[in-house]
Each structure stands twice: as C-alpha cells, then as structure tokens.
Image (cartoon, rainbow, N blue to C red; front, side, top):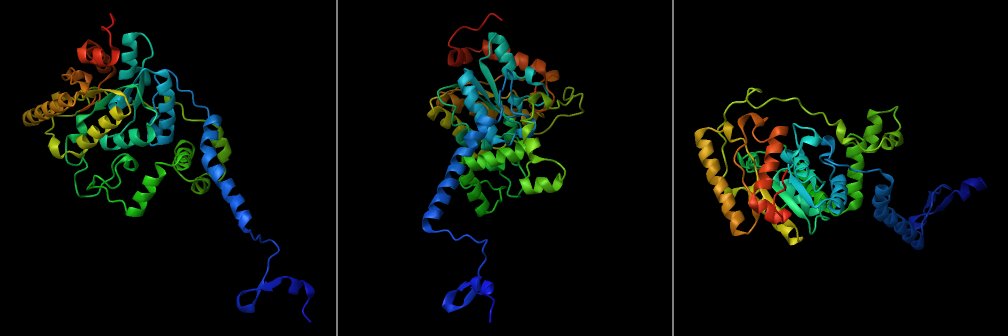
Length: 382
C-alpha cells in the first residue's frame, strides 16, 4: 500500500492524471490576483514620489547637473521643478551653458546673476546635449517649464558637419540617444531596433522607469542591481544609496589654455545646409514647444570661435547665421547673435573661458532685445 503522506501529496491533473503537489505552493484565486494587482499598481505609482521625499536634493546657487549624471533625466526633471519655483529665467543649452572648462561659479548663468546682483538665472545646461536631444529633454522631462523666461542657446557646432547633424547613414554612437525622436523624423545614423525604440518611447511617460534609471545612474554606475552586486560583491547597496547624490563640486575641471595654447589649428568646417539640417529642424521644434507652454523664449546663437575658420568656412558660416536670423525675425523670436569673443577667450571651437563668459553676460545686458524680452527694464549700472 502507498503511504498516506504520499497519497496526500498528489492531486488530480489533466485527464485524471496524478501530479505531485507541493505544500509550499500558493494558488491564487481571482480575488487574490486583484489584490496583488492593486498592491503592484500602488507600488508602481507611488514609489518615485516617496523616494523624492526621502532623497535629499537641495541645489544651491550656481547649481548645475553633475557631469556624471548628464543622462539622469529624472534628476533633471526634479531640478526643473525646483528651478521653476526659485528662478525667474532658465538658461538652457549644451556644455557651453553648462560650462565645460570652468567651475560652477564661472558659468554664463553665474555672470548673468552677477550683473543683476541677485539669483535670477538658473543653469539648466546639460553636457553633450545637442538640439535633437534637447527637444526631447524639454518635451518629456522639462514639463514644469511653463510661463517662464527661457534663454535657449544654439551651438552651431552641431551643424558643422553631416556627422554632427546626424545625417550620415553609417551608424555611430552619439550623445543622449534616448532623447532623440525614435520614429519621426527619421535619423539615418540611428539604427536601434524597433522593440528597443518602443521601449524607450514608453519609458519616457513612466515615472517608475525614470526612477529606476535614476537609481542606476546616480548610485550603481549605470548598472542594474544584480550586475552591480557581481562587480562589488563585498559592498552593501543600501550603504551606497545612503551616501546621497554626487556633489556637483566634485566635478573635475580640466585645466586648459586657449585653443592656440592647446595646439588646435584652423579648421575647414563642412557646414550642412540649414534647410536640410536635422539639428536645426529639432531646435525649431524646441522653440515651438516652449512657446506653446507660454514661455518667453530668447535665443542665443553661439558665440562660436570664428578665429578657427578657414576663409571658405567663415563665408559659409556667416551665410548660415543670416538664414538663422531671418527665421528668428520672421517668427518673432527675440535673439542675440554675438560677434566672436577675443581669440584668447576660447578653449576650443565653442567653449569660452571664465573671462569669456563674463564678457558675454555684459554683452547680453547691453543688448536691447535681451532687456526688452527678459528684463523689461533698462540695463543695470553694473
């Protein structure tokens, strides 16, 4: 005879067959599944908000997104929310605005604040952000930028070649691919498979997935928890999280002289045509988006290091600038297109030195369109 315990551990399966039954298994009924679904939904919806309450984030004067968190769009969104409640004007752009070769207290936004002797301008620059990605950053992670003054910087570097403009058919790695349009307009050098593109598009609208990405970038070297644990077998992940967000002051500033001191020579930039430029198309989209959100938009073009140009390159660039200015005027977008700063105030093709930023800030305050669009008052005496 079979043992009673063995009989008890069997249950009827399909077609009357007997299958082993484990006393550790749990069979959920319909109501049980509903309860589990509700618990998961609550966790999915509330955890990012609760985490924001737990995680200390107090950006001070001259704050800028830490360099190693340039792809942490969740933190950028959180900073947008705080900056919009604290500052009158947001200065948005790439590493020229962020201040690639200078400390946080030597950026354009710092010197703009110095001109008015108050904290009115926030540094919302992101290192490596090009117009195609900037448009996505503002659309999906800058939703709180509404009814504000926005200085939107256009760096002509992104139109200085077909590769920079993302027009080449050969695939290559470019900055911030998760922010560019995944389907329309088509980006020839972007070869990501459709399932991945769909996943990226979905994650943009999910605070939960944005939070997961934030944890990976800010605390786990952009790795998921199992991978990080394998790489750091003797470290406690909770202790890593407890250390808090990286301090922007920890950003290492590269010691660099002027572009000539660094051995950089004149270059023949292969400018793309403005009518076919992807970067220019998506920069215009960013302007339209900001205006649709009732922001006052002021465009700053450059200042590019024209001292590096060959003669042919200079002629083409100035023609492109005229076309950009024509479009801005036609569409009633306030703007400033400064002349090139003195040669010694550039570290490379587009990044000024601290002295260059200070000079640019003073030029902006001397510009009538800048004062009328953003200050609505006369230039300060300083």
